Length: 378
Length: 119
Image (tube, each protein chain N blue to C red):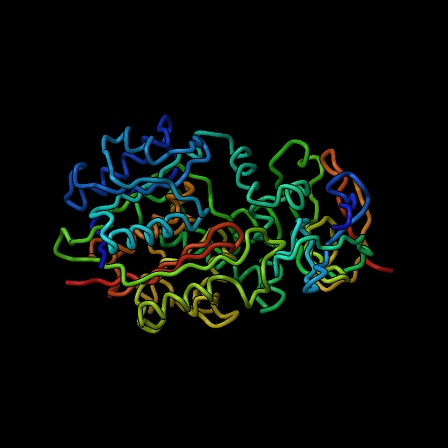
């Protein structure tokens, strides 16, 4: 058994003058404080990567800087799925008795530490170096390709996709740490600058500075416990050129494995924390995971289903689309928010019941998937 | 193993693919083995350049000065007649399902495949 005993999250946006290590340290300290643990209690460290400050041994760079000497430490790289992949590994390390308290941490000054072009260019390198990158694609273009096909097969429109941006912004408006807090409308999304059609600027997550961290422990440290019920992964390809058909993508495989591992069904889920790098990502994942029927996710947004007061509150902090995206930390904010909801600490964003949460992360171009169920225990 | 044929990734105006001599698997990314069964020495072929558009994305925001000079440019995934999928450029008004033929155009200092609607 493993518990998420503490979470830490910085505001996302501009942290002028902060390095990746500064942001990691800030989030890590917040997670330790939340768990009620000291540095010396941490015997495992898992960290993500920083595109601004790449290093072949970031976990030990961080451990030395932060002042801990763990018995287990390394970095993990699975793109946007890294945060949940680290959490899954921490869960298994704790269950196997390898470590008692694993610190999972990521942070990056991706917005102020480099130019936006440098950031876009660095990320585009997930493409194939010979067969894709020479064509000048960007991450939005990879997802734009997927979006065009998804819209074609399931009759989804650009206005449908815009609904997800509007929803994430509405949620971000209630979180003081969110990068974007001005309400937007479907018309605003439709009128925003074209980036890689059918995706426009407001269909895309921003580039942010920020940090996030959790502590995964063998024993609970607080009164309200959040237990990792079970998790699973699926990896079907790296490059979009080599992706399987839309009906065979990894999200459906990983959620089926996670359901099997936990004995839980989608109907048990009360809160959803789903990766949303682009509006199309969120629309597809909701439908792949079974949180909406094919082509029906947008209608569920319009009906309030995924709102704070709806039947399936979703990313109540605003997601990558509006809370922000600082790399690995980006999707870790989803878990921090789920934890706050499950422990009834989400203040004005608190939902009625977050007793069971489903988290899902995606890395690459729907290449790597991690599905995870969390359960509140008293 | 048959000799590697030059293709657009090597500056030649051609698209190539491989077929496995053991299981028949068709692959676009060049390897010394079949990614489906592991057999070594897949045979190399030059593709006809005929295909059908699987997906499109018109890129309007590029990330480098070299590519920015070309915006907007249409990135495609094309299902080629020989049974493999590839990424390429194409006419800006191409739509999913269109039958297309490959040509080649310079782009950001390299030669890239550029598809036009079949006539």
